[in-house]
Image (tube, rainbow, N blue to C red):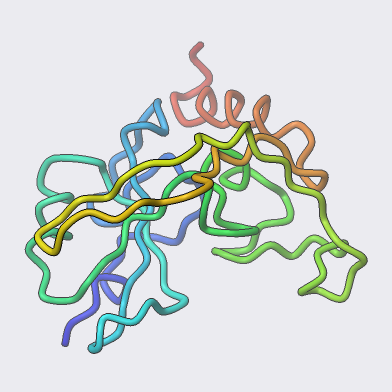
Length: 162
C-alpha cells in the first residue's frame, strides 16, 4: 500500500509548511500533524505535516492507509508542534538534545498547560470517556525561547516582513 510519507515535497525543516503541497502558512493553526500507520492500522514512527483543510486534508481522508491526527500536546520530543518546529536540537522528527533520556541524558523538562480535564469521544461504535486530556506543551528546557523563535520563524518565512 502506498505511503504519503514516501512522496513528501520536503523534510520538516519548519512546522509551518505543508509537506504534501509545499504551501507555507503564517499560522500554525492552519496545519495538522499526522502519524502514518502500517497495513494493519498500527501507528509507525512516520510523521507528516499538512494543511488543515483543502486538497491536502482530502488526500489524507481518502487515502486507504490510516493516518492519525496528532494533537498539539502529543507527538513527543522533536514533534511538539508549538515548541519543536524551530528548535535547534531537532533533526527531522527527532529531538537530539543531550539532556533527553533517549539520548543518554538525565532528562529534559517539558511543561504542559493545565489539563483540559475530561472529555468524550463519540463515533460509530458509541462514546467513550477520556480522562486527563493534556493541554499543549508550553515550554521546553532545551528550547527556552521556543515561542519567541516561532514568531521569528514566521517573519523569516514571510521574507522578513512583520
